[in-house]
Length: 312
Image (cartoon, rainbow, N blue to C red; front, top):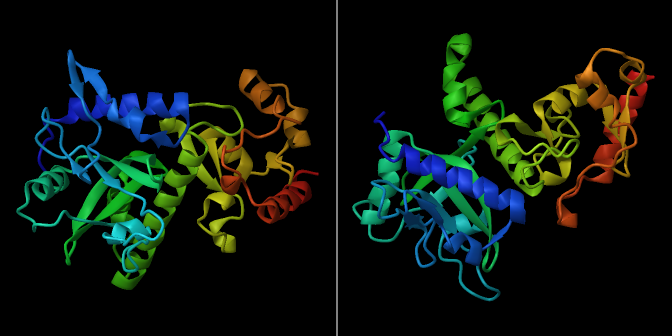
């Protein structure tokens, strides 16, 4: 894997994008994206409206990719507009530009893949409105004029779901190939779920409002082990602290999205961190702006009944 000479520009782009999302919400109008950002006295663009794969003039490989939303009654030109994952790997396919792999935009994207460089993925939710997902990586130069994308691993935000799985491979080296493929596909699926959930909550913890992306996860309400779906309505964005407390049934959320704290925590007397958890009792979750992204009441009811059983 090659070193990335564009690393400083990528880091600046990610930091500015995080600032925009925290200030304006998880879905950005094209006007804001088109303003770009300034670095060393120069304007650097995030993306270009006419093209999907974008490399700023200051960079030597792609910075971003973009999917447009098809207008009503218009033809869908690219398969990535349909938003489906690859059935074999659980990764998300993205179509290359027309003109073959030698096209300069495709080469810019493949160069980012060779370096293992992270990208920004601007996913259109409607014409002119985009949900940025970052970082994402091109993990496979697939056939039929497309590549496959991985999102950041929920437990290792600086790694893709594929990279994180490879780091853990020695512990599973005796397991057969079919198991490894299933485990990898599941992990990739969960990585996209976590990233999509964090985006819906504006990259802030629903319990505390914490905006530090590296400390956030998209957590299931109905657990994956109970066949909980990997949909935003079955997820809540929370910090790693609140995720641990939520999984341990030390905090729960009722169907009105009100937080409850277990008696064992409320009766504790052990420093400011415990006090911060105790202070959540009776507080309402910070919910996504879009009603269709908010937690499903049936999932909340299932989880809250488990909380009551364990905490009382």
